[in-house]
Length: 406
Image (cartoon, rainbow, N blue to C red; front, side, top):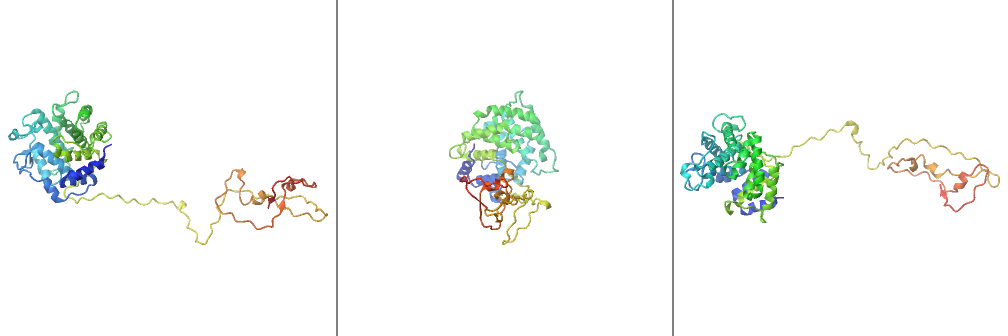
């Protein structure tokens, strides 16, 4: 299992203020201060994208998508800078539905963004299409909002999905770099092209054991962002792979150098968090969700408990099951030793108590109530044999049994 506490500690220890703000919002939805959002948007080119290098003037598709990923963690996709960048991406779509980098970037662009390269074009198409898909419902581009799947950029994203599906081989593979696979699967999933998306995910599942930790984190965070269920086998396997590759300091290795380890760790955190807070609606004040106050369930009248008795009152015993009244035991007169009146004989103990406590052998448990003490009667020694002897016969001699005290 991924140690999220260690990953959070790594970001806090090694990240800058923007990284820590991304972490805070991912975990709790805490609103990000305006100055940090301004810092994350710094360097934007006049046209709307972001350059690939500091102080650059030519915007890059790849660099713009990277900035959008940061703004997404910060809840800034609805701000003017992000909307401007999304409009710039949509305007740069080629007639075939794809994207390519500006030819002026050919001298120093990485291989996955080389202008004119078919593999790079497919990767850039999947990347740009992914962010237009994610942000379409939040962004407010010029013109009326399109309510179809994809929101403000529905037509653009639909063309992207068709272009990506056309590049798939019969076995679900694609002629481009590995990240193009999960970005394409996310676009197709959101466009409800589930069969094409599932074919790509099957290929990714086979490739997962050989992926780097950074790629696994990117894959899982991408699919979670378009609401692919975390119980899906690919995401379950991705979390297991992240648990196996997490470093002892809580972070993960980036493929682009250790200066990007914090970014990779934030992706892993996004991939492994049980839920992600919803981004604030543009122009609205972000408020932390509060638990709803549930009304108390009504209590039926017949089950309303009775009022408690006063402190000095003693509760009466709870009524038990109906018990038949005691049967009077009439003993025949036994003459006294001198022919006088017969002696007074107390009734058996069980008979005397029958009207107060049910007998145990009758299968009735006594009620948990206080039994009032019977009237005090002078004790008399009575042998059981005296009670059982027939009338007119002398009682059997005592055999040493314990006397019964009435």
